[in-house]
Amino acid sequence: MAENNLTFKEYKSFVKHKTLVISALILAVLVMVLVAIVTGSSGISSIDVIKTLFGAGTKQSNIIVFDMRLPRVLTAIFVGAALAMAGAVMQSVLRNPLASASTLGVSQGAAFGAALGIIVFEAGVQNSTSAASAVVINNPYIVTICAFIGGSISTVIVLLLSRLKSLSPESLILAGVALSSLFSGGSALLQYFAADVQVAAVVFWTFGDIGRTSKNEILIVALCTIAAFIYFMFNRWNYNALGSGKHTAKSLGVDVNQTILVSMAVCSLISAIGVAFVGIISFVGLVAPHLMRIFVGNDYRFLIPSSALCGALILLMADTFGRLIVSPVILPIGAITSFLGAPMFLYLLFKGASKA
Image (spheres, rainbow, N blue to C red):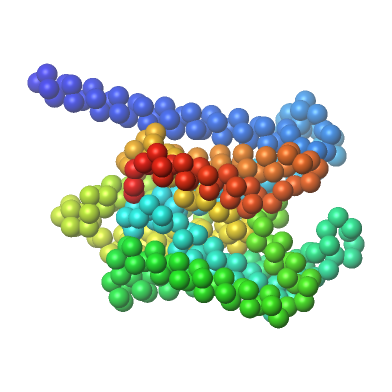
């Protein structure tokens, strides 16, 4: 009896620790949301921002807060959460710590689709109305649709290879690397035959920008991210079982093939949607899950929500840093996440972060 009581106490301590980590992440995200909203180069004071949030702002402060800063914050939260969740689940079902939207070719496929939309459908043109930006994407919906289709094609190819050829998780990663190279080569060829303005527009899109989303696009990303989160949490025990191997998972009643295929489809869907709307955002899907494994382990009951919160926090911090470091110039968030994410990921690897 004493042994059973001790085990129960240890389990309570186990759950309490991970709950505290998630609570701390929620608090950190809320604090970062406030910091992101009150800081900027417009000259509006923090007090005026707070007044605006409570409905007592001026016309100018309403535009700055509700039309400029708040959409950026919401986009960062949902795109960051989507990429991080997708990375965590991909690493689980493929049993490979390097699995993410980038390594499976989803991001590169989306970039190729965007290049196709900008160059072939002439969605990138010279901006004659503003000296601040020499290039503008005059039809963002064509670019977004093409980017989503490109990312989805990469997903379909990977899933077909998995289904028809029964490739191992390691082979799927190699297939993703090959697809990434193929799409990158296709993008380079398109740019080689394009006009200078179109090439500049492609480069501008691939930099990544969470300030380009409209309210409808934010709603789409939010709904897809929330739906994916619900699906992932519903399958949290299946992911835990897969961590012990396919045979063990099958013996526990998990439909392994269906879980892997559907989970990969959902991961790729939310990744492709996020990348299609904001451009290439690197390393969030790799770093956030590994970082959270240090604090909550491999239990997907806690890893999925903590990874989502960590991804949102990373993207919020990166965007705020990019807006403030050389204010009023806004640095591309894709470059920020690459600079911050690559050293962090190398550090995690050298520290021996546990594998998916």
